Amino acid sequence: MSEKIVIGVDIGGTTIKLGICSSEGELLHTYEGPTGVENGSDIVCQNIADYARLIVEQSPFSWDQVEGVGVGIAGFLDIPKGIVKLSVNLYFNNVPLKEILEEKLQTKVLVNNDANVAALGEAWAGAGRGISDCVCYTLGTGVGGGVIINGKIVEGFRGMAGELGHMSVVPDLEAIQCNCGKMGCLETVSSATGIIRMAKDAVERGDRTSLSFVPDIMAKDVLDAAKAGDEVAIRIVNRAAFYLGKSMAAVAVILNPQRFIIGGGVSKAGEFLFEQIREVFSKLTPEMAQEGVEILPAILGNNAGVVGAAGLIIRS
Image (tube, rainbow, N blue to C red):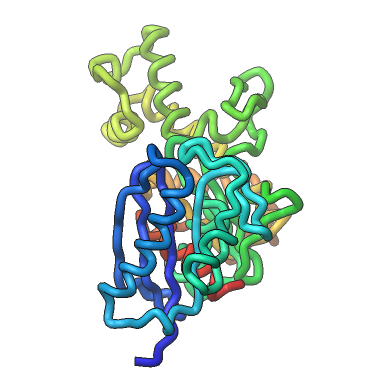
């Protein structure tokens, strides 16, 4: 078997996920093992190398078919050098991850931000397959993002390109402080955390809502209540959708992507959410910048990071 393969690695605080992908982005084999954060960065790096060897051993392929290993990791990175300057969850501080893994694995290694990598996964083999220019949003605890132009990740001067959650979109009078320290970020209203905060605020104000009877409000509770006709929940979801659409309108006139792709837990609200986003986008975006542009849900789910990490090698 002479087919070339690539390995994608998605490093999480608890587990390391790996996948073998074909050169077309087909996920052929997966493996998952404990990260081992409690044992220090040296052990985490060794685990990555051991798991990469193991996943190939478990597959029909051999190591000499491996074209390279791509790695996605959360944190502040020197992307060209593959150095993890700081990853809070992993306790990495100036770890030369690319250099360490290339020495251990004797193959090409590329390292990038986890949000960029997930975006590349969707662009390469998911909802953006066949599209050269797309922008991906991930609506989870925060709002992550990634920009793909001409099929490649846009990283920017300091690797900060695609930080969509920190676009300032909320007017001053309505704005609250984001975790980044600035006011009015998209993340404060359109993330799961933002939706929960707005729901709890409404309950504390005494607004009449079914959410008053939910002991520990989650974003799904708010979305379900909105779908059931709860006026307070509808108002919260409308607000989250409005600022997502507004942010996309701004991105559209700067980058003019062909497709916006939305993933993460909040996106599971489906068309109920997407229709509102599309409506706002249509109202706020100049005609020529929205012509032919689609807003679609992500399709790779939890595999986006692994597939995108493998894509770093193919798309480099």
